[in-house]
Length: 410
Ligand SMILES: Cc1cc2nc3c(=O)[nH]c(=O)nc-3n(C[C@H](O)[C@H](O)[C@H](O)COP(=O)(O)OP(=O)(O)OC[C@H]3O[C@@H](n4cnc5c(N)ncnc54)[C@H](O)[C@@H]3O)c2cc1C
Figure 1 (cartoon, rainbow, N blue to C red):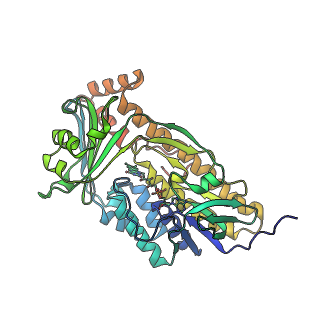
Figure 2 (spheres, rainbow, N blue to C red):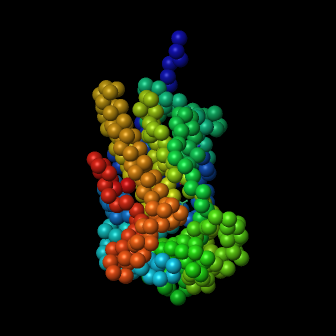
Figure 3 (cartoon, rainbow, N blue to C red):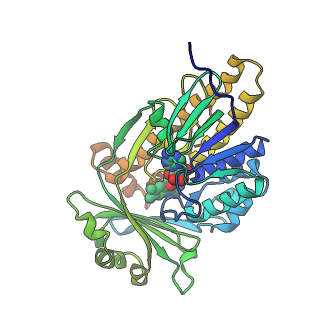
């Protein structure tokens, strides 16, 4: 005889208190659900630097819808980037100032640590419960819900689970869901530096330099955020990445593109080879789990910084789908919103992965198509500013078109 399933203890459990889990919890709470967030690490853990710095206007708009005033608050907490400066082999091909409009219309730039702190404070204020130091080890779903088993052996029974447990998601692995895509083999060095004491950093434009002569033809990007500046160096094949990321290496290359002061004021440095992968499905056969954020997809941060921006939409949509499923009066009606959300967000994941891949391809310039496009745009830029703008738009913004039938840009 089959064992009876345990009664449901929680309508909605979110696994992971990263930024996407926090927004999922906040969105579910705003729909009146009791939410428990289960997080592997202890309360007050240090969070890694770098990572997301840009929230787009449509992300701020979605936050504003979730919790009135939150989009505006995020805008005020960050800074508005005043413009873009694009160079090719040392020559400027485009410069454009962004009109000084409210951040809800232009976006905002602030470190992910600051973003997470604001969202966590909101969750606490709204009465979200947190279970810290509680890594999920496994999950089993059935027709009535999901049972999470923690590393301690404790079990938690939920009607629905939002998996926001990041790139190595134990929930995704427990459900046997694979990721498909590839890992880009070129390494990047990402350095966050302090605000310059002369006060000039927040007024700096977002720069993208192709084939920088001072850096032996490497590409480099830099842009300010609240409290500092992000500098991304795209390594060349055969580079000694460890040296370039070391304090001596940074002191050797960084002063060639920004004020030498920055090279001695590094907040955080990391090296990345970016994965470009999307989960094969965003839900389980019983429609009790939705994968969100990096549990569902990993993209390079070029071509629009889509990781967290799309994670916010995943989280908000997952909470809406679960609220609708909980209201449904039969199993088919409950499965429908979960299915629709999983299908739409996976399509978004594939779209975003391709946008990031387009950006990486153009930035590398290794295939004949990208080389020709780059060269044509560079030559046309003095006569047609749009050609120069395009050279900057692909790595910094990526595809800004709406997928057919989609309600969110990312
Ligand atoms: C260099 C870089 C630059 C980036 N720039 C941008 C950008 O400009 N814009 C943008 O939108 N995105 C950007 N991103 C992507 C962004 O940082 C990620 O999309 C975002 O951090 C994903 O958040 P998450 O909550 O899904 O995952 P995470 O931040 O990884 O959080 C996962 C949480 O789950 C917890 N957890 C893990 N395993 C378990 C378990 N078994 N049980 C319970 N809890 C668990 C973890 O401790 C963590 O708290 C960038 C990323 C990088 C690396």
